[in-house]
Amino acid sequence: MDKGDILLAWHDHLALARRRSPHTVRAYHKAAQRLLDANPALHSWGQLARLDAATLRQQLAARRADGIGNVSAARELSALKAFLAFARAQAGDPLAAPPRLRGPRIKKGLPRPVTPDDAVNLAATVAEDASEEWIASRDRAVLLLLYGAGLRIAEALSLPANALPLGETLVITGKGGRQRVVPILPIVRDAVADYAAKVRWPLPKDEPLFRGAKGGPLSQGVVQKAVARARAVLGLPPSATPHALRHSFATHLLGAGADLRSLQELLGHASLSSTQIYTKVDAATLLDVYRNAHPRA
Image (cartoon, rainbow, N blue to C red; front, side, top):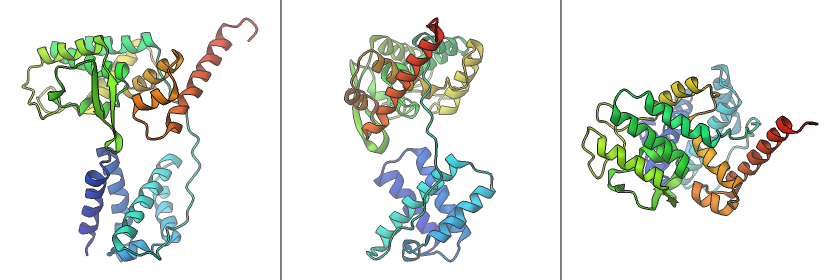
């Protein structure tokens, strides 16, 4: 079995069996490729299944020499552990044990939401900066889906055209193929309908709803660059990204009294612990208000 066969099987497992996001598939595939390139003697599932911690440690040391930090090193180790777990399953070797190697400690930062006014102003400013009217409508619709429905940017951009016309709810397929139902506010429905009426390209039912300037699927990079220009105009911090609008959706709902379980369903989190971080965000926001407003703070 050669390296190409191993990597193809790993790619298909991630993309088809596990239904991981394209970004995750790409990152995990590259991590496995680097491991195999550095260890050409590894050319079977059995050899990979019995890989020891020393080899993994050497691989991470090489990546450190490339200049990666703690976050990237932890992600690399996570990808390699998943790859080796897959190898053990492929080898069918019950005696093979996973290499014991602890990754670097990562201090988790809190999500940094924007205010409700800033979220709306961000969408409006991005639209004002657009080169064509239909592109303005498109960008506003995408950003309102992120803030108004809590979608990840990849989820919004992968919506098929057959989702039209939007109703009061929308079924979203998120990470790991998990499906959830999200409510669609009238302002979001109207924004998407306005885009669909103005877009200059055809919208085949089985293709992505949002189109780029040349008619292909809209890319995340285009949206991210448009938001970067808009936040510079508005004087917002670098943390005001498209994904921050999803954080804002969660934080503002929690602040308005939403319970964690409902919020978990709306966000599509597999674990409640992923949702609980927003309680810390809300508490941090309250402390900021207190420090700035209380005369004795």
